[in-house]
Length: 511
Image (tube, rainbow, N blue to C red; front, side, top):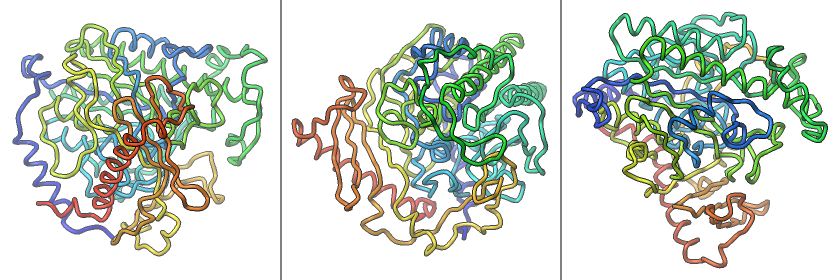
């Protein structure tokens, strides 16, 4: 089921965006010239897996240079500890539970307004390359990249490795021979050339397939990590076999050699893109932003300094690397400790291009004052909420979209129920019950973090941490600050009520 008249609602909102203020303060500094924007996203790339964050073995020279010369965001978070929801937050500025993208396998909803649509309204040429994972990328899908504001796309329903099968603008997938990160950058450069010829600013989104498992790498990249110490990665871990598509147990050190090779190849592709921008006199007026979509996964967790890993709302699941470069506007290095997250990208880019925000709850904030040095501390709390307990009852709910339209087409290595593709789902929810408020959830307000979870008996467990002194979340201080714990719990609950109101579809009824 799809809520009617969503395209009309989008049209009227986007008209308002188009006739909003023409340019932001940043754009005015460029003599009224709108900047080019490139968003780069690593798949399962955790905070610890960069040279600049102190990894003992990984080689990421390009990201290290970005951290040294651009904006280094030391406390950047993914809006979710898993990939699809985070990707939804990037596009919409909204928490993914608002539109039923609870976890991988759940699509976005067509009524959501994406940052790409705001870019189109401002005259940008828009393109998506790589992993989509918010619904099928086929042409008939109502949630493919084209329906969400991208003029062109070369994309995959889910993740991919070497020699990826990608769909161009919704056509049947075709095999592209080579290293996947390099392939995406080659395609992005071709799109940029067309945008330049057309005299348009460009908005390019590259969502890498790396370093998500199952891992593979080029011989020259694997060779860089052939001599990892025997004392490193000594445990056995489970992941997908490239040969069978089924789970396999392997020595972690061998797995990490392949994973590190993927990260280095991805890093190199970013360098190739930066060099292209420089050679074509585009780097000065191009905002390039890289970050990860969630924390390091369990099979790769060897150096994570935080609690837990991917899938968890503790720091190990949601702290990710993030660096930004925009030489023409931010010529001096900047390092910030302000709390930021992937939902902030939508309002930040909207402010930069001078677009008005849609009339619906937006969870992110405009980060541009932090990049200009005007602000140093985040004032609005950040909320996290992993999944939804109603998922287990989804068989009793009506599908939001025709299930045929939610069937994926992109082939992949990993099998699920014997199938080498991924289908999607989203459900109509017409009421709210008490259990809808459950699920692992957290609020970060300044340097304090409150975490709420339910135990096996359904009882709510509360933990409070001071991230400024305890980033590993080892010491629960709720008994020391009981009033603060209650205050944060109230803020979190109030926010959840807003999220569940959105889940009912009430945001789409606004005129």
